[in-house]
Image (cartoon, rainbow, N blue to C red):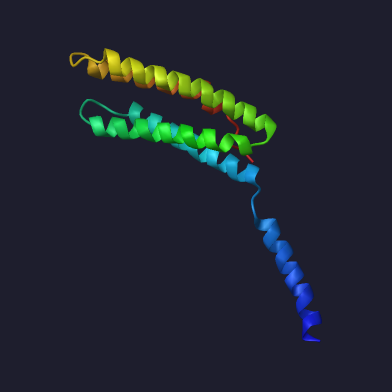
Length: 141
């Protein structure tokens, strides 16, 4: 008798638990959106640096965080639905290309006499690259 009462309760509990889970596409979308958000945060932090607040380690930390975010986005892409996958792939490819170009330029052309100006210009390019690529990725519901 107790089993008959327990079965409907267990069935409802199982259905509720199954409905609360996220699909792999939803998890991938969240991963992409979290990484996108962090890229924006890192770019903003770099933009707000001044000669008095900028440190080599701080800049490197932000740039490494962006690299890690780009990897997270690339790792999540295969699990996204087709429309979002293409949008994210285009944005990631565009931003990554500009990011690598900026890093390469900083590494080869940075001189002590105008390091501040060069870094500021590079960060502005990075911010523009973000606006042209990831700002367009839909992270809404």
